[in-house]
Length: 218
Image (cartoon, rainbow, N blue to C red; front, side, top):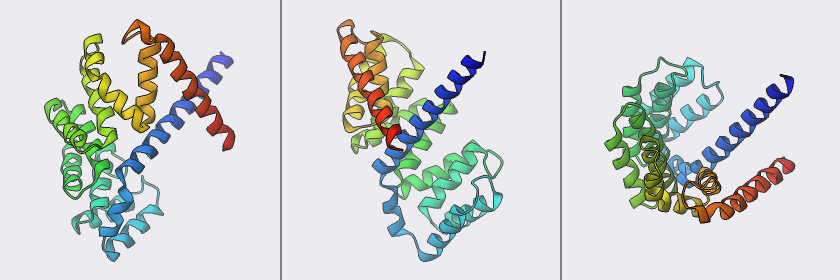
């Protein structure tokens, strides 16, 4: 039992590190730092004060809400996050959608991804696809991955995997961590074509080596 618990903890840590790396990659691709150049000094001060607090502190939500009402795009997507997760305020998915949409209109690509995720969660699948297709049309790499992922999540079939493969391959080529892992897993499991299995194992090995090297450097 102890060995199983140890393995589960290692697996949990690996998954946590993987998604943290994916989130960081998407943040970099979204160029959210560029939003700061459009923020007023007053809103920047609010954001900096909120950053010093725990996300679960209701005071952090209040600061983000104040900034959102003052037109801060960064704060609008953060208020959407608070309402979506229920951290720092009672969860309200529809208010979250409202604030995410405002942030999207202000130029936040991260809000676009979170908005699409929430649309999928509440069953508004066609809207979710439209939002992500807009991202694809603008060559925003994370949109390729999430459009493929949500479409496959609705219909887990080989035909759909073949349909979304070009989206996954594009995102993987751009460097999206989750796209690279998903493509490798599908290939090595023979979920695309049998002839892809050797390449899938080769890709999976490269991903594992890259992860091990990254851990060794930390």
